[in-house]
Length: 173
Ligand SMILES: CC(C)(COP(=O)(O)OP(=O)(O)OC[C@H]1O[C@@H](n2cnc3c(N)ncnc32)[C@H](O)[C@@H]1OP(=O)(O)O)[C@@H](O)C(=O)NCCC(=O)NCCS
Image 1 (cartoon, rainbow, N blue to C red):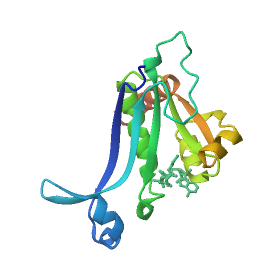
Image 2: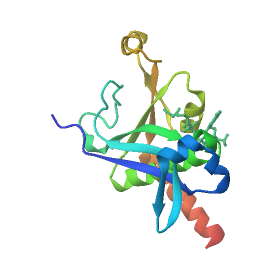
Image 3: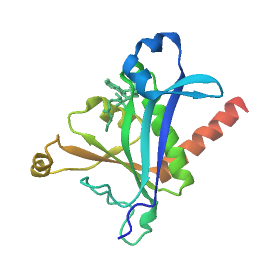
Image 4: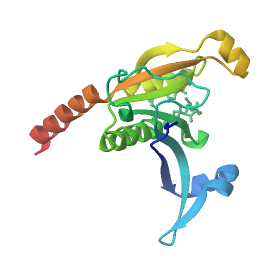
């Protein structure tokens, strides 16, 4: 059974600035040293190129006759609570879109709990739209809130991006 093609973990890091040093839990688990500089991982997500994720709703796109290797899912999207609402979540998703395009992904998906308003707003801002939702019985069976499945058409998103880049060149070139 072929499912996973590849997975990449994208991390957001910042230098360990003084005000962050008080975030003990974050610093004890997420601190590292690079080129002699102390840095902290403050956000992360996984990009999974696969047909489906275990125990999650499966995306419909691209259709069955098309190459299924062009579907991917985001998972484990998180930003440290100390740095939320600073655009990090948006940047991580944006970075994952760029990598997904490099992998040839056309259809990007993410699952989000029905009561997670912050994450739903983040994904809407990033261009994701509703595709389907988990039945209540399944969520009860799995002992968690119901999930929505959100879809992003990376082909259209790329066109929009290209137009944005072109506009940027005209404005600033
Ligand atoms: C969801 C999460 C990743 C957002 O990360 P973030 O870095 O705070 O998000 P950003 O600062 O990039 O926000 C981007 C947009 O998301 C929305 N948003 C983010 N946090 C929000 C909140 N608490 N309330 C309402 N909207 C929110 C807003 O639309 C925001 O745009 P705006 O600032 O222009 O209004 C973060 O809250 C988190 O880690 N939550 C816990 C883990 C989680 O729920 N992960 C998602 C699993 S599906």
